[in-house]
Length: 592
Ligand code: GLC
Ligand code: CA
Image (cartoon, rainbow, N blue to C red; front, side, top):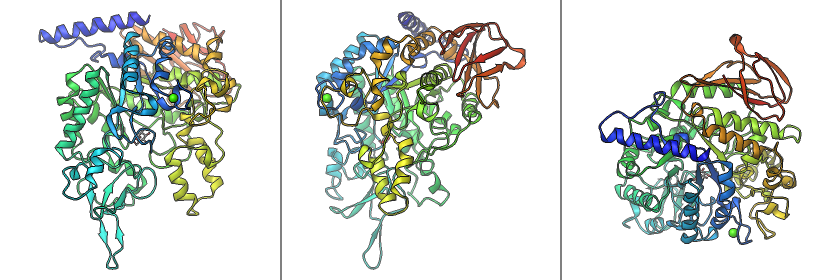
């Protein structure tokens, strides 16, 4: 099936280039221009946590290479690798010291080349993380920049004198808060000026207004594309153009600083330049992490007539009830709200835009614990339901390592259980200053912390879940690894893993899930998400029971569910019916 998809994509692409060469319009599918990245299923790997090959407790590139057969069998087409570059790891690689070197804990360039060759050999592709809003403060550009006001690299970063009170007290240039607590400005004693860092003090923001910065970034992009990577996930990309004049945020803006920081006046210009000089020269894909970007602003970034990005991650669904800034609480959410988000996407985005669909990544807690029911009786069914939804809604689906096993949140108790700088900084800012009690802070963090997603992959039931042969993984393994692991799921036909394989295979030969129109049949129902995907004469019906109770659901408008293709509950068999007797968290896919 997999090869059939590839073959079909290759044929479509070949036809398109013929059409382009002869000056004809490309052949559209339901109004969409066909692209390999629209048809792909992407799988994110957080290298530190995926597989350790040498027993030092840190996942690495040879570890990933050793699991490529597993990924191929899962059926995914593209791997997104979180940063693998040389880094002092203030923010686990999102602080880059050298963009052309591999992080030594992960291996070296030969290991990268072996990994990439292994991916290509299996007819998959690799995209890497482009983190260019900021660098590490140990990057040579910043080391130079901070030396003196007249250093040639001074303008690579954003420096300002700030304010000096009559008594000599210094205060930052403005009231910008950092994503990781405290001010977004740090006074550097060497030149006695402040530098801007939206994230940690060790992550100074690059000054994209300097054309030399842009040329350096474009050159490192070419370096990796020429090596054979197929594109980039672009870290916090809407932040690269800073607000004109950097004025104080108003009290209203302080409620959601990312919206004030993002989509600055020169963003389109920078992205169009990047597209013209780099991206358009390769058969690549680009997906921007769109912090601070509303759905209404999305067309500005992804409309294919603008030549900027292919897609963005919009956080409306994943952050439902929470915020995109600082430390959020786990908020209440309802199914009509979640459906409303997907319905709005389908309305606002046009055939020139393309969406992503995801509920997980390395910055968010586990899907099944956050949106589903991770109790032993419901975990498997609810994990399957969310994957069914993600793989059948419009947009390119992005999965995160461990989703395919239904991995859960970690039982965090004390501050020492965490690694994340976001948690450590917030503890200092909130608990050490007496603003919140330690117990309240720790209780809310356990549910939202990014470290929930970063605990090691659970491969088997041997000590440390088969992640490392050593005794000291960099972050503790979830104690539930004896029940939840890939080896156990491999041998269980009813496992999340085996269901995911079937689901991904079904999507791979069903273009309606890619290019088909979407219709939500019952937006207000509190527990059921029922929708269709239609491509020409082909129609699919998807029905999902978002509750831990069985439910009899009668389809609206006299509709009948025809042929059952897949259910996440083994033994489910109802077909040609208008009332469906759904088990808790059951999801079904019908061909109409
Ligand atoms: C993005 C990354 C996150 C990182 C931040 C700063 O949000 O996903 O992990 O901490 O950018 O680079
Ligand atoms: Ca290792």
